[in-house]
Length: 329
Image 1: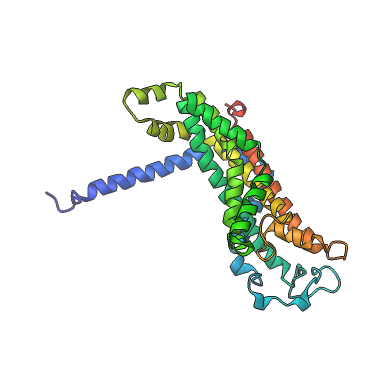
Image 2: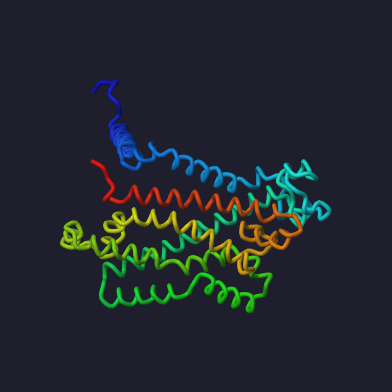
């Protein structure tokens, strides 16, 4: 054997690397040739929305490093610096470019940290909604019969309770059982659970409709014939064909979850004022609007509006692109 030939053990590794590289290239090529990429490349408005959303997410994610102050650190809060206006208003302080709130906290820092909390609650609640809704939708659509009837009636019952009602019930039970301090310590997790449990039927109904359309197709019949278990058929074969509507719903539900958190915090049922979120910041400054400190409410309110607007615009675009009736040949 010639010494220039590679050892036999290296050949399979190189072959696997070449196959993996080919798969990555083919996937990238498939993405670049898709209608999704074509539509995104031609729509400047969607590109701008995605850029704004990405910047807001990155700013919230890196808030501990880019925020001038830590709103959770009481040693950095000076009550004598409360209600200072932003830099474009007379009487501002260069240390606080967006002013301060009634507690003396830097508004820029509290907005960054507040957006971080709101996004965590939004994404966490949507993940919980999707987990419950997808599982229930798959079971209802694939098994049918009594399982379908039971789960869909449960979804109907859940839809009769608003997010606000669920929050009032859960919040009252937790505060009565464990106290206000315990509720404040676990407010983020509780809001994720409350909003997640209140909105899962949206996923369940959409996934059920997709499963009903898919389970009568030939590939599902073939999987049954070769003896694959129902769990594998549902999660490995049917679920991937339901991902498009799930993605569309998720974009809308993230915006809804952020709005729900802001509404609950504004009513005093969500995040406490000591733990800034966009909703609690709006609530904390609401009583000071008539006294002239409008920025305490207006600035976080503007951030909330922009955040929800870009998410909804991205969701509308994604819904239109993933609608098969709009595909162009």
